[in-house]
View 1 (tube, rainbow, N blue to C red):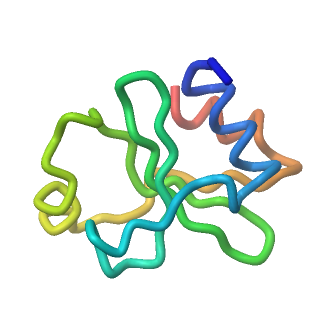
View 2: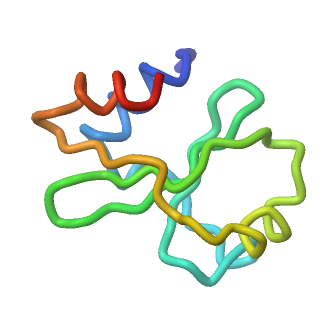
Length: 89
């Protein structure tokens, strides 16, 4: 599948378990989804997907994650995906 970040957010919101867990990178309960040269780091809750970070895939991800103080960028509730996209842009 080839798509941009916006399409990836939509795809993840409909299939939140599509991403991979990476216990070698972090002990946080997050999933990873690659889009071109970026990595979307997110977690799922009962009714939404919470985007924790979007970063270059070439970064040292464990260091990047350990330096983060504020974890959520925004939440994607399946019914409110358009609002989340506006908040991110």
